[in-house]
Image (cartoon, rainbow, N blue to C red):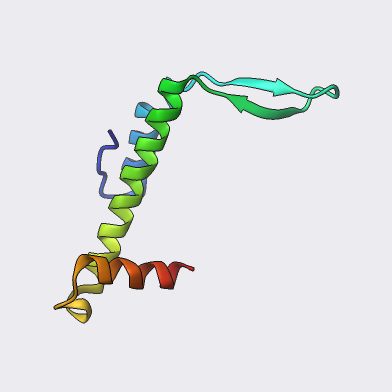
Length: 88
């Protein structure tokens, strides 16, 4: 699980120590020796997806908090829809 950090340096540290140390990719290389694809075991892939989902949730929560009183009285679903429109 992604640990919440309060600044960029802490986020970088946690990502490097939690996710990157566990990744052991294998590469598919074309006839010219260029890496074209990555193969990950299912456990690593699942862990990465979970980390990304956690990070997405944190970012969305921070955006909702930043909206503050401007969004007062709206449901979380309404705020998330508005944020998705802004991100698009």
